[in-house]
Length: 500
Image 1: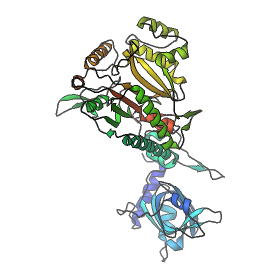
Image 2: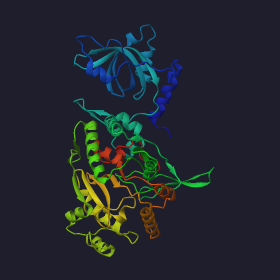
Image 3: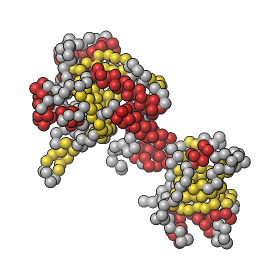
Image 4: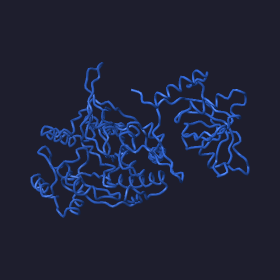
């Protein structure tokens, strides 16, 4: 059902066609400058920008008889236009101005203009238009954007449901949103440049996998008709990247789209991005130092400083970061030392601390729940949590000196995990036993327990050198780097419930 505004725009479309104007012309439009360039560089004393060619959306028009003011918005910002009827319609036919511009062009239409720059009496940089073309007719009205008496723009679109579902409109009426995604791209480039400079190779691994692995998560499941086999969208790319280390690469990394069939929140989207890195002949202590160096550089490249305001917190990524073992963190925040406790005793601690658990959870998951409920949210500055219980980390190598512990760390920042890393387990016998323990947890009802991957075990049996591995959640890090409160704010098109 069309609303009144949509009906009017369709009527305008028909009238434009009747005028002999193509509302969707096939040719392009030559642009020689952006609105931002003109604003930053125009100098009336030297009279530059005498031949300006701009295109963008019509965002405002103010009709004043034979002359009018308007604004167009291109990818870099807005530019005011001055349009004189007798200049864009030099012949006797004034319909282009009187009918097309004054009546039939709507806010949101794409137009192209040529002209020259000048300053108005109030000092505003403006383009004096000498020609105007309709490039694309808009059939839906944009949400209203209000400007107060001081000229400050107040954007109307604040409803998250509308913004995330119709991101294309959000970007038009809330141009500041673009800055979030520009920063995200800078973040990616910084990671890539840093890792390339170290000589590591960017690779691609399968998204459709016959056996999902590399993390504790529930997968999305599909079916390949030709092969008549079940496939899964990857939950991680770890096991494939380690196969490449087996194959002889010294360092590989991948920006990977991963998919987990789990709950949604402002920190979780079913489709998300990680960067995973694996480097041969290194361990988790080396990787911690690399992460500090790398993320500090990413902060500088993205924001020009290591200090970033995130809500009420000023986060500083400058090295060195604070370090706790997992048991040290739990004791520091609860006053309870659980390092020597068995599963039953830890269940009692969960009850004492009012941490919700269920019978399917093994010792490792119970410890993880305690840490998540009592510690994680209090870790605001970048902090490494190290030395996890072996039950929590079936892909990490056992600690070189501590019984029952693996060489693993997570980086926590602003109360959430942003990365996970191991000294990778390269003993195929130990790895098989860990997988089998995960199968037992699956039988107890843990639907996030890992499955056994025979081909990965076969690869390990050929021999994998000592290796350090890392995964960084790009969406969560982007939230911090852009001061965004929700993961949906840093994903162009986040997953949404079905539209009613």
